[in-house]
Length: 274
Length: 351
Ligand SMILES: Nc1ncnc2c1ncn2[C@@H]1O[C@H](COP(=O)(O)OP(=O)(O)OP(=O)(O)O)[C@@H](O)[C@H]1O
Ligand SMILES: [Mg+2]
Image 1 (tube, each protein chain N blue to C red):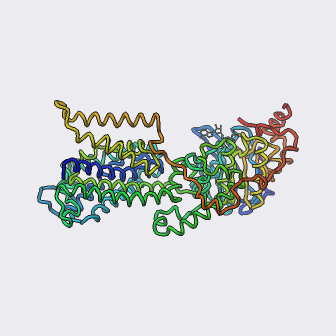
Image 2 (tube, each protein chain N blue to C red; image 1 turned 90 degrees about the vertical axis):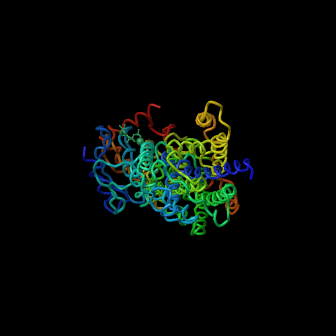
Image 3 (cartoon, helix red, strand yellow; image 1 turned 120 degrees about the vertical axis):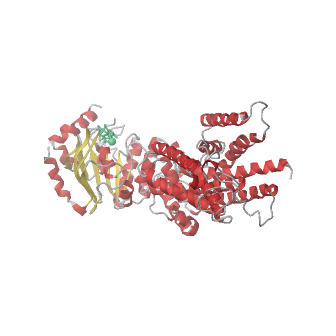
């Protein structure tokens, strides 16, 4: 069962990877959700995190983004050890995430959702609001301009003044990515960014992710659609029953009987029976 | 001055004072999502500190209190606001770090009860159950005001203070700070995932709101000249909640409307009505019931309040400065997966 992990060696380790974790474990009231996640996410690439439903993918994303504490294990962003860091500190290091079930800031407009994202805004300090109002205003203006550009790119420009709670499911998915992009992340974790959206939008979202890669962003995405993984992901991590089963290119994994048995076989059968 | 105008200006005072109190609770609850069920405790501390710091060292009335510095207006009032803010920081540091909103609400209620018992029973602090009285009327000496002319005078002073505080609050709620507060209100976890140190912002919100509570309380003691534990039964917190829920959570104009409807028209106006013969105090009880029912009705039929939170639109000037106001799909990249066989229409295996 551990043989798959050795193949991770060729992706390098330490600072060569943008994000890595070792032996992450997590259980909920005695039920083990993650039993040993160990992998490196290579810098500047798009990596897929795949595995059956309930394999622990979302839990791993929650732990990597600091929103959940792991029971044991270690993790690093670049060369910085971030084990047990709080999520806002991890975010400030440049790691952003989206959620499997969209979590838009419903009472805020689409534009405001993006404007929350920039770090360390002058206007977020009570003193600056009254003592340095011009600085705060100038920065707000720049952020708003950039946010409108991002909204234009993501096709949400016309919805800018709508409350985020009023968006459709697909629009919310786009908003989550746009909001994360607004924070100018170095590492982006996407939890099923294409789940529940129509094929045309899948294409568009895939294009956005490729664009982010061009801009130098490291992406780790949870994805069930193997066509998408094949098209845009450079590297694949297979998680099964809470542990890393194998890592490598999708073509290599297709030749791995363990992986085929645990996950790929299931999917291939499912798509051929259609 | 006729009794009529005396009453009118008394109502005007309470309108503006409760507007200030409502702004303070609104930044905490309406903007940041903190269920501060101890709000009236911060109001009371502001009142006590303002009163005790403006009284002379010995009032010659046998009252016992701390401070007794004989501070002039508005220093005594500011001190009341600052004291309430400091208490908020203290409470936040011990209670807010690790508590979820609902637990925090329970902790805050018990905190307000403890504070109530201490002030009620520990006489050297603020004269126990008798509370403070004979608190000097601010500026009355300078302007040679009589008991009658003081009421309209101070109602107007309170109106001016409310105006300044409304201006400051608008600055805050319109700023990125206010936006981050609302982000935390909508989803704390998302705010944290976007790099916001949630606790720090909650602390800031508590500090701002409690300053407003303290000022509102200080004005109460300066207007009435006395303050004791019957003035701030812990349930009073819910009157302020009623003001902001009826008026409209998250909207400063709504708060003024709420203060007018709930505090002025429902709570204080009936107090001037003559007692129903044979049933002293009955009107007051009915009053409480009416406020409760109004709260139900509002939450049921119009939870957004009389004046709902407004949508903050993109500044027009900004849009004109940008490229044509039309979104296009031409720059949208595509990855072209559709040529691959067996595209799963549901987007892959989904639960
Ligand atoms: N907060 C929680 N409390 C209790 N159990 C949980 C919690 N979160 C996840 N689990 C359990 O942990 C296991 C892994 O869940 P997780 O959501 O990480 O799976 P996943 O790989 O993301 O699945 P999917 O592909 O369906 O999204 C599941 O058995 C789930 O029931
Ligand atoms: Mg999941």
